[in-house]
Image 1: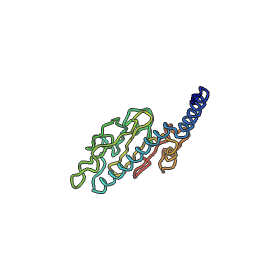
Image 2 (image 1 turned 180 degrees about the vertical axis):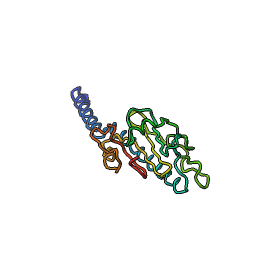
Image 3 (image 1 turned 90 degrees about the horizontal axis):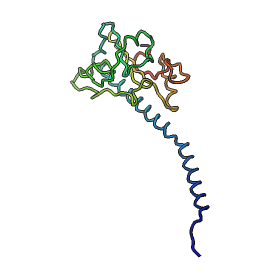
Image 4 (image 1 turned 90 degrees about the vertical axis):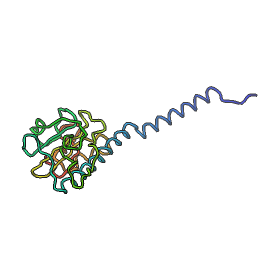
Length: 191
C-alpha cells in the first residue's frame, strides 16, 4: 500500500495556511507600517531641521526675509490648496518650491552656508517622503524676530495624534487631513 497525502488532506493544509497568512497580514497591516515609517522620517527630518536652524540662529545669523521685506517668509514644497499657516494671507504670499538647496533658495528660507566655521549643518534640505498635495513640508520664518515654524501632516494612526498635541495653532484634528490639522515644530508656532 502506498503512503501519501490524499487530496482532501492537501486541501485542508492549504486552507489552514491561507487562514494563517490572512491573520498575519491583518495583524501586521503593511500599509500602516509604511505610514508609520514615513511619519518617522517626517519627525526625524523636522528634528534635524529644527536643530540646524537653531544652530544657525545661535551663530548670529537670521532667517532670510521675504522679497517684499516684510520680515516674514513662507515656503511650501508643493502647490496646494491647503494652508498650513495661521493666516490665510500667508498662503497667498507663500512661495512653492521643492528645491533642496541649502543656500536660502530652497524650501527653507535659511542660508545654511553662511554659518560660522564655513560648514553647513545640512548638505541638502529634506522633503516629505510623498510630497503630495496632502503630505508636504512647509516653512514660515520671521527674520526680524528670529523665529520660525515647520509644518507637516502625519498619516499613521500611531503618530497622527501628535498633530493635536504639539502646542501649535493648527491642532483642530477630526479627520487628520483638514486645513486646521498639522504637525508643527519651531520657535514660534503662531506663524
